[in-house]
Image (cartoon, each protein chain N blue to C red):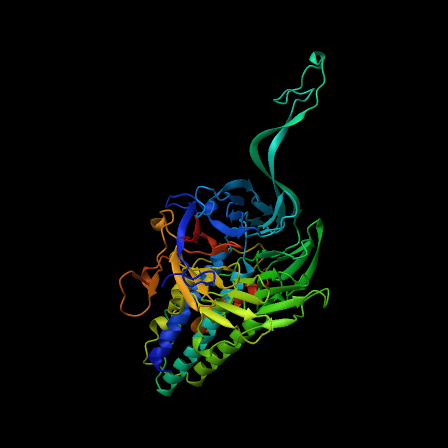
Length: 177
Length: 448
């Protein structure tokens, strides 16, 4: 996949992810409560978008490494997005298993890539692609008494801030019933 | 040429009536959520988002105009369901009527089942055209007479009165569904019926409202492993042991209640392999089945997914025998339809009386008919502009190519807020009821 096409797919996937997340949040305030069927379909779309987002990012990373560019530290000047969590009244007590594991693995892979070439600076403008995903709602969610705010690992913020959120959302949506 | 209907390629449809408010502002409670003819076609019931049921009755054919079928006029209106609150889950339960199903008529009264997300009710609709008059102890207005003034005794007699139609709830079937009820279906034995929610199907006896049997349960032990939900269910029209349920993955399972008490193991699985060329972000959503209907004969099954209608032969599970594209031009617009939520619309479908034609709705107040025998299809529009009585409906066309012909409408001009989700076909005649957002249109075959 060419770099441009990968970026387009990436942008499309991110947009769909953003739309899906906002739909998920909106559906919680719907009359009649959360609809299982709709939530399932939303999570399926988010999963597809996430998978495509990852595969297009991987192909981007590969193509940029091949060019032997030095990479700038993308975390400089980056907004740390608040990690909004789904309201805990809906979250089941079961720990999320599948999704965060794979998200962690992917974060690890990204970390390794970073470690491989610590001095490389990418001439490619990371700009919007790696800055805080703008689809994340900025407002931080209300915490229940006694709860601690979830601290996002920095690597996740860089490449897949959306991933952790989606991992949370995908896993929390269905067990909420 | 025009027309698809009744196995005769020359059927032309004409406007008969339209029911509902004319305002552009649609009150949410007036949104029609279900339409159903009874078994004789004499009665037509609609349910709305406000929890009301309105029943229309066909006037008998008048001798003056034998070529004109009777009009449908309001017969009864009642509040079937009220909004409720589930205190345990802090959830509001909508009063919207999801489905209405008529029971076959067994005596003078009519019975129907209506359901919202959680509760099913059996309603008796009966006529009263006589009332007793001439009580000894009561005046005609109901006040008790001073019995000192009673000198003679008389026998009260029934006197004719203006027809009154009464609807009374005979049974309330509640607390059996954790998830939202999407279907109800009366068994051909006329004693039992099923109700289906996202994960379970329950079997009820019409006489017993405090107990139901769970016959299908697809809830996984771990909800995180959930991959599909039940979207519709229906009993076979004449085999009382057979029913089907459709899923969000595009599969249909046929179950035989004689095989086991719990029908988790299907007897037949109807599934068509996905076309890899059509894979997209939204493939899974558009393959979700929104409606399933047996043919009157019981030989075929019809399913509706977002873009197509499929006819399955019960004897062949591997693929449908017929597939009709309802609005294929929307395939390239799935992303926008996802954003505006239209991709989640649940269209229904229906058969005509002799199973030769099927009908389903679309956007822009268009609805489509597919004639299975003549391999013809037609797109018609439900609109007040065609509202002159007996004016013939002109076929509509959506232009998909670059060049738009005269009278064609381009895909981008379609109004996605005007959707026809609910349609019904008279069981015997070529009369159809088509629900737009808040209006009910009745069309009939043009008779010469």
